[in-house]
Amino acid sequence: MTEKHFPDPTRLKDREICRIPPGTGSELKVVAVYPSSYRIGMSNLGFQLVYAAFNRVPGVTCHRMFMPEPDESRQNDSKPPRSIETGQTMHDYDLVAVSLNYELDTTVLIRMLHRSGIPLQARNRSPRHPLIIAGGVVPTINPEPIADILDAVAVGEGEPIIPEIARAVAKTFAHRRDRSESMNALYRIPGLYVPGLYDPVYDTSGTFRKLVYRGPRPEPVLTRRIVPRLDTVPGSTVIHTPFSAFPDLHLIEISRGCPRNCRFCLIPRCYEPFRIRSVDSILSESRLAVPGTRIGLLGAGAADHPQLEIVCRQLLNEGKTFSFSSLHASEITPGLADAILNANCKTLTFAPETGTEIRRLKLGKNISDEQLIEAVRLIGHRPIRTIKLYFMVGVPGENLDDIDAIPALCRKIHHVLIQQARCEKSLPGITASISCFVPKAQSFLERAPMQDETHLKAVFQHLKTAFRHSGGVTWTHDVPKWAVIQGLIARGDRRVLKLLIDAATTGKSWRSLTRNSYVNPGFYLHRKRPLHEQLPWNHMKTPLSG
Image (cartoon, rainbow, N blue to C red; front, top):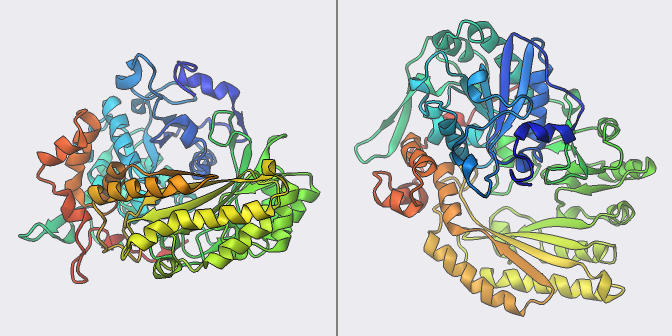
């Protein structure tokens, strides 16, 4: 999909099937922003549920906005983004609600604000500018690199806090446009962090020391909002569009969080505790699907749902087919394998993460090669077209044996598939997707150093040679430069923002910007942070609240 085919973004809605239309309230106008393309944003179930949650609040109208696709003439490169529903710009709304789930989307958000004529620093905005509030994984874990852009951060899950935000902004800002009064109301909402009420302090070496609160008393205790029971909130696709990345799927969130504790992963921290949606609730959500679509069962590890086989059998009994976001190889049972066969799943995804068991165990990924091979044996004779395998390189303690083990494991799996295949035409393909390890704030490895760009390039060059002898296996990999930028945003502090703004607005290369910047990326990326060092995101390690 390109702007060549859809010159007017409002035409996209003509092909949508929407279960929850925009509200018609006049008390508050909200635009839900996903800082990526329409195709990517509309594939994100969380974003759709945020849109629906705002529109369920009485008196609220919520529209959607995405980063426009570039056209061949590049005429769209300077135009402000406009809402899908009405073609309005950010200036036409009281509240801009941003979903941020990937670090690199922060630079897209900066470009969207810049092109909209919105001052990039919150303190420079006047009453005529909308409030900017962000939620999602990135600001929940570490909002500090973009804290000065945001009026507030919704910490945790959106469903419990969205109605409270909407009522507070409607009362203090929508008509009176009093930014000061709005901040005083917002900081009192549990689960809302107002960065403008805090100042960072650094020591003489430039290392972060603490945040100092300078707002109204008493100082709020930050908490992370959660939904105690998933059955109490909607959990499936709200708007079906043929232009999403999953045009034939009705997505259903069957679980939230993860019962495992992989040391590199954010999900156990960001979405704890692990919760499941009941079988009855999943089936009810599946009955909302547009006729002709399949069911996409979403969860950090869908197979961790204790009643997944029951869900699959019930869906099959109702004549529905389905697929999974990913599966933990140790949870594949003969019964689940049969369900996969009957559901006509075309792709299965596993995440071994590393090529060797010892490195896997050190990362907290408790899956053996034999468990992975056994899972492949169980599903190998089913009509699967593709098996996707996710790996990482650059992990702590990695050596050449760990790297060489990635293509070796892929070849071993391919050999098992050959043995299982009835004929050559039924042999599934293997796709190995290899990313760079990026240490994340609030993960167990938040203090670990990240490998530099040169090293990561060398690893991929080595793998390029190793995969030449892996027939039946295709592989893709990260761009190390982007992984390094992601790492800077993931564990940066407020001083990083100047570099991000320059990268998003000047058109200069990243190498040129870092060469002339007072910000040293290596300080944030490549050193091991000692245990006594205070981390810029420590204040976000908050207790839970409903």
